[in-house]
Length: 122
Image (tube, rainbow, N blue to C red):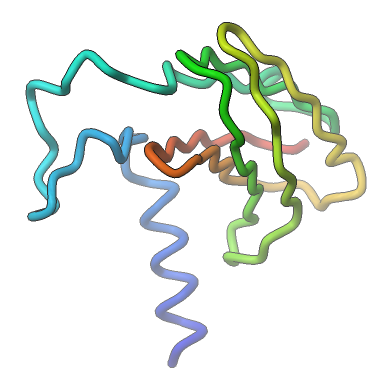
């Protein structure tokens, strides 16, 4: 039963739009007016779809440490690393050429913000 619930949770994560978790208040409601002190401005993952290598591009307002995780459709963590980001635009490459074809979820987070992007490995 836990496996089914975990799989359904992951599928739902892939079906809902990407939400910047910094916009969600304590009641789980997405705030319409997010404060201007955003630490992480949107992430881009390319190429999407990919045959193996992806590049993550993100703009960090401050130098900070981030954790990058890649999760497959079953909820299995297939990649995890720590990134020491600099202020400004940051690029980070991941080799996923040994992973099976499918839909994956990239999660980039630090102590203040968490963002996610879906991508496809062909």
